[in-house]
Amino acid sequence: MKLKFNSIVALFAILSACQIGRSVVHQTPGMNDYKIFPNRDLHANNQPFIFPKGRPMKAQVPAALNIQGKEVPFEKFLKDNSTIGFLIIQNDTVLFEKYFEGYDSSSIVPSFSMANCYTSALIGCAIEDGLIGSVDDAVINYIPELKKNGFEKVTIKHLLQMTSGLDFSETSSDPMGEAATFYYGKNLEHNTLHLTLKREPGKVFDFTSGSTQILGLILQRVLKNENITHYFERRIWFPIETEFDGSWSIDKNDGMEKTFCCINARARDYAKFGRLYLKNGNWNGKQIVPGKWVKESLTPDATNGGVNYFKYQWWLYENDADHAFYAEGNLGQFIYVNPNKDLIIIRLGTAQGKVNWKEFFAKYAATVE
Image 1 (cartoon, rainbow, N blue to C red):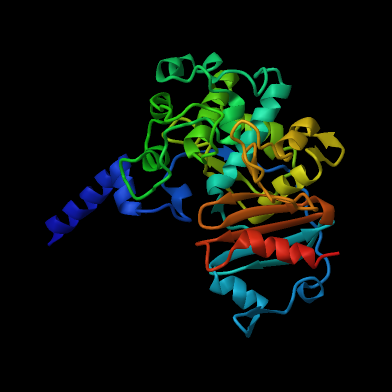
Image 2: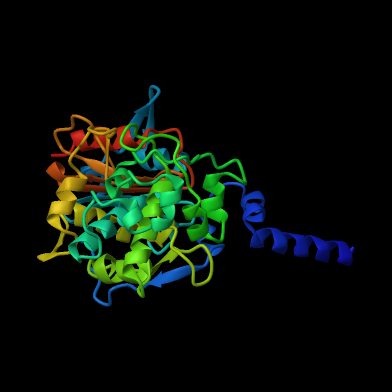
């Protein structure tokens, strides 16, 4: 019996150490994935910005919602739909902050694809720092190995706009597919250099994690002796006066950041990144992300395959007078920002629940003065 148990333990250890094994053992991305990947630390500011508390929930949020003809208390609605953290911040004041399922303000929650927007911000910083020429630069100027894969016409803007024509499946159920390879694999650079195209760039919008990871490889190349996490900490994380330490998951020890996902942080610090873009890249008088970049990132552009609901890794609302935008990650992680209402909403969850959160945020914002 002991021998059999030890064999099972050994098999589990072997499976956990390789891509296919990780995919089989963990099956789908989950809330504790930051524990299974190596990472690089992000250090909090020793003088963090703290959002002050404001009026109680009932003053800004309905006590109950009408769900299929029944009155459901707001907190029950959140809990019943797999929410683990929910913040509403207006005019720099926390109006509502609630956690569920044992989570609290200090609980780490992986960003999943919300990290795309952070990667976009770093591209903007790298352009300002003279490390990258412009969004119109050809990708092969920075990653010449991709020339043999047909990337001659692909630009950085194509990657930002998700119009690169990349052949990349987002299906996570295939342990040998691109999504699993990038998420669970241990050689991101190698796998990125083997990506190919399925169509000419600049023709069709197609959300692919691979496009954001190519942006990450560009950052890694131009940073040379500085890793992406340190650059992020220096340019954004520390300057926005984060309250908690965080981390960015990498593919292997001393490896590469998963720039299409996997920033690990707390709800309040996600809110600070939303505040940074709410304030046009300015943090209490200091320009952190170029204002021109923020404006460009949030201005719809449907030319050359682009769409009006997505720009530079951010999701936009079409025909929205408030010019709201949001970052979205797997399992229903959201940073929602509404500039006209000076409003930030953070929703973190273990699953999407039975809610269209994009619509929920918009409907709630419509009730805010």
